[in-house]
Length: 169
Image (cartoon, rainbow, N blue to C red):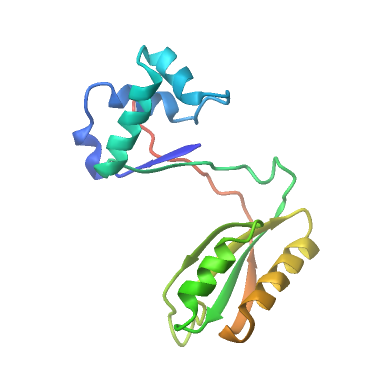
């Protein structure tokens, strides 16, 4: 799990929030009830842990609490960012449909940068082989149909560090 925090908002942390963020920098505990485990570690009720996270998110101190899987350790060593040139009229509907596919880990709209970059829909897919990634891209292509004028797959060439905010102890 990763907690994304806005650095400009760190000064608004309340008593106990800093300890909570420090306790989760390396991820949430991998137990059935991570909130209760954090509460036990920090001597606060699980309900307070959840309420603090919700308040910090509502106030913009943190943006999200999200899973950050290590696809390589899960056996998915082929990672392709599929990029699509989808009509502006269909981008919202098609983006939602592509994002709902079970094999798409994240999907988002980005502006085109004509004449160099025609693509406005990005969808990350992972596979155990290049062929598997290409099969998944073909499924997206079929879903998009006539709303799509072009696409390509950008394969990962390196593992990037995936972490949220790191506070000094």
